[in-house]
Length: 279
Image (cartoon, rainbow, N blue to C red; front, top):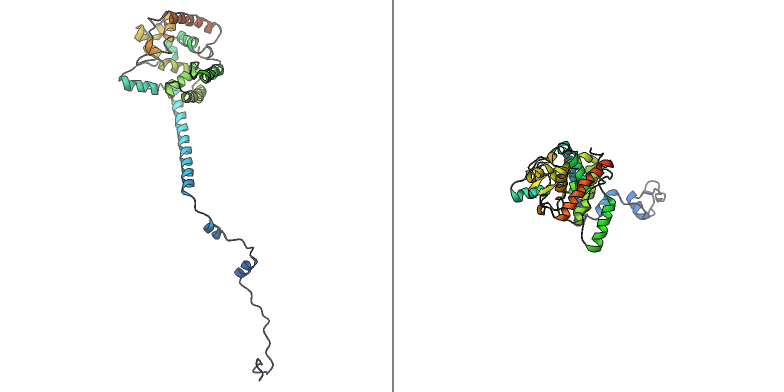
């Protein structure tokens, strides 16, 4: 029998034409265009670097810390709208730690008498009722002088001085000046003019360890602030830039002239309606 013949019929055997299907994986690999699976991509992806992870973690931590700080600050500012701080601000706390005692008698604005607010405005910030916490003309002059001479001068509004005394620190630095700007806007928005002026008169320093106009009036004249004469009130206001080195009962000729200008300015403030925001 011929080689390859069928053993039953004797006919030559034919090759089967049935084609076996190639595995799907082999076809894809043959084409070379199949996309790798998601698991393959994940395995091939490089591991996150330690530095990148640390930076992301630090950014998240700082962002959350900033959010917590802002919330706490808003709560503190809102609380001080109605409650007098027991120790005024950071500077007063530092003085208490240094001296061991303070003279501090916070009062409602109405207890000081209208003349107290008018004298403060005449001495420190004649446009107090007109601006929104910042006197941009005075700020521009101060910045120009700092650029040319490297010296920071005054010119802060009552609002800025209050923000400094309650929330910040003393010392003429650009950092503190920069922080005064948003804080002044915030307390203008939350407190309003009357509360700002009230807080200013309550925590301004009038002598070493003596804070507030009420405590200052009793310290120098032995009477409440509401009992001061117009000239005595004006003399008290001349102390505010340098309270530890001045005495309202022993002013220099220059400061005495300034006190008399402040006393005269009180009438101008009232006549021109520059006290309407707290009258």
